[in-house]
Length: 113
Length: 119
Image (cartoon, rainbow over all chains, first blue to last red; front, side, top):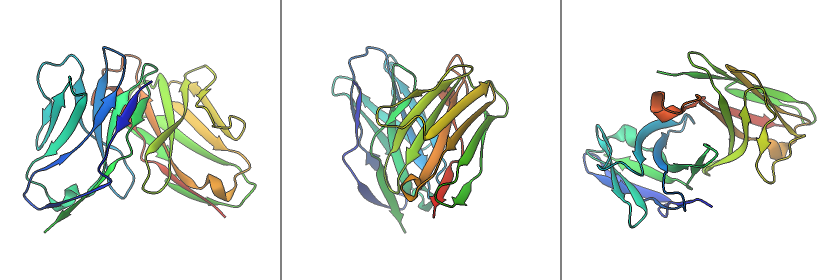
C-alpha cells in the first residue's frame, strides 16, 4: 500500500525567502508519479510540479523545484523567492496503481511581509 | 489547458433532501473521474472512482447508497448525496483523467469544488 507523509502541519516564511516543504512516501511499485498541489482558501487545486520515478533530473517549474531523493523516498518542494500569494495549503500526492491520487495531510504555508 | 467545470460551487440544503453535484470536462474526454471529500483543514479523501459507462468503485467506508455516482458520458459525471444530513456537510471535489493520463497537468484536471452545507 502507498503512503504519503507530510510532517509539517504549518510553516512560516518571510517574503522573498526560500522555503522547503517536506514529503516522504512509501510504495512497492517501481514506477510511480509524485505531484505537488497548492490549495488556496478558495479550494481549487492548483498543479505545481510533477516528478516521475524514472526521471533522471529533479523537476523544476518556475519558482518551484522538487528535491527528489529516491533512495530516501523523499520529494520535497522548494519554493524560491516566496510571495505573499504563496500563502496556502500545499499537498504532496502520489499516483496509485488505480490512477487515483493519494494525498498527504498537507502543509499550511504562511508568507509574512 | 484542460478544464473541468464543477457545479454548484456551493449549496445549502435541508436535512433529508438530495443534492446533485456535476463535473463536466469541457475540452477533453474524461475517461475516469475521481471524487474526493475534504473536511476543513484536512486532506482530500478519495471517495470513489468512476469509469465512463461502468459502475463506480467506492473506497472502504463510503456508503454507495448515500453517495450515488453516475458517469454516463465521457464529459459528465455526477455525485448525488441522497438524504443528506449535517454530517455530510463538506467540500467535494472531482478530478478527471483522460485515457492516456499524459495530458495537461500530467493527466489530472480538478474541478473547482462544491461546498455543501446541510442544515
